[in-house]
Image 1: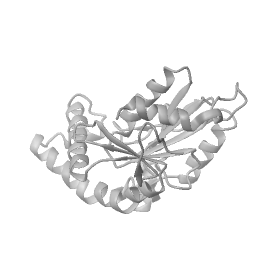
Image 2 (image 1 turned 135 degrees about the vertical axis):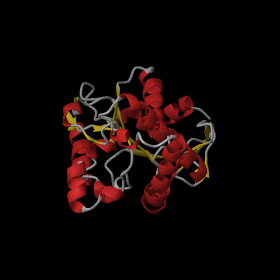
Image 3 (image 1 turned 30 degrees about the vertical axis):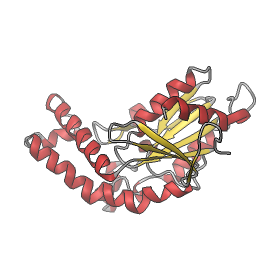
Image 4 (image 1 turned 180 degrees about the vertical axis):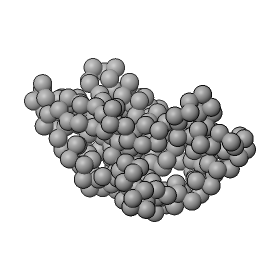
Length: 248
């Protein structure tokens, strides 16, 4: 399986419903969710490139922008649960997705460097043919047309998270404004140990309690291997389909 095969499935499902405001049809909204570090952003970018090559306009937004600001999380005692559903402004996310169907809409943006929503990065988007919404906090009742779940083994997810954490940690050595600069006193082994602790205490429980259950409510499930390759695409999270029998 490949990104191209997944892109073809998305375009087929969009059918005549995509087309943007100029074509008189509302944009087709694709939700892409899965665990922290599953590769949602990377897959979204690859899908946008593949679908865009066919002539459709594609935009990507992240649900991270709808995380409640750090100050609010601190005041509510939710800092250590960042990423759990209650740390998002889910109503604002729904409003933005509904608004983009009708015309231009505002989407806040999250900075992984500062570890907070950055008002200066907010985007005002005009309705594209297809909008990919990637991130956590996407559920069965989120107003998207197609919900995709990105699945990988827990051991691979942990390894990818540690790798990503170390990438931010190394970059912070030259950027004192980075959130990760506070861990500069650690050596690589210490930073990796901290990342594994965060995974085990925050991200893994969130995956099991809130993220993984979305698989059964998804339209498509994309299973990845340890090398990030797409191994298979499942329909409805239950049965595999082949080229001759795409999901309806």
